[in-house]
Amino acid sequence: MVKRVELVYGIRAAKRVRSWRTMVMEHQDNILKETEKLKLVNSFFNRMYFIDDIKLWQRKDYWSTPTEFLGAAGGDCEDFSIAKYYTLLELGIPDEKIRLVYVKALNYNIFHMVVAYYETPSAIPVILDNLMTDIRLATARKDLVPIYSFNGSHLWLMKARAQGEMVGEATRLGLWNDVRNRITSERLAQPIIKLDD
Image (tube, rainbow, N blue to C red; front, side, top):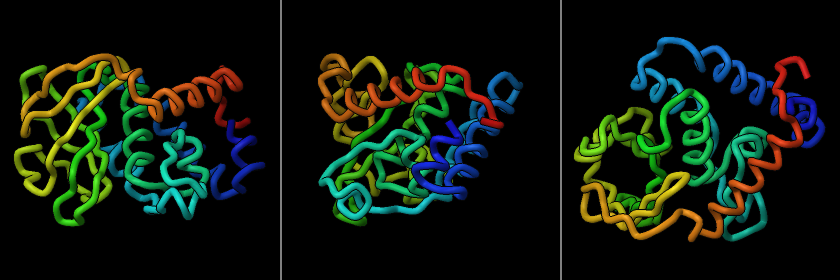
């Protein structure tokens, strides 16, 4: 994986991917609390740069894989969120505790994506966001109006800052299906991830 990234994106990109894989391997089976994993992942990816899809991928909307995101050293809000989501899964946080949330960011008057973590099913989630470095409760993020959320299985329409109403399967989202298929292809191309490859 690292050599492939180096060929496509260069040496610095390969170092970023190696750092990511090292972080995952070091913390996958350890006793870090879930909240500590959230901080670790949020901080790691928020070092990347925001780059609009048109500039980076010459497309209006493209959801990159974590490898593509790190290779390019940046991306837009979906790319930050997808990289965080998949890394949290790898660190052992259950899918039912995390969601990708499509919101309206009022301060910027844009549609935006963040990651929400629910400690329990009825808990107020905390938000991992590339617009803010710290993780905050959703109730403290008056600048975000949730629209819909999804994870690996389900799709919810949001009601204010509550859980939302499940409206079906996440497979209804074409861009989500596309990025998931590309992530699966990357993993199949390199089933055993070695840090020295």
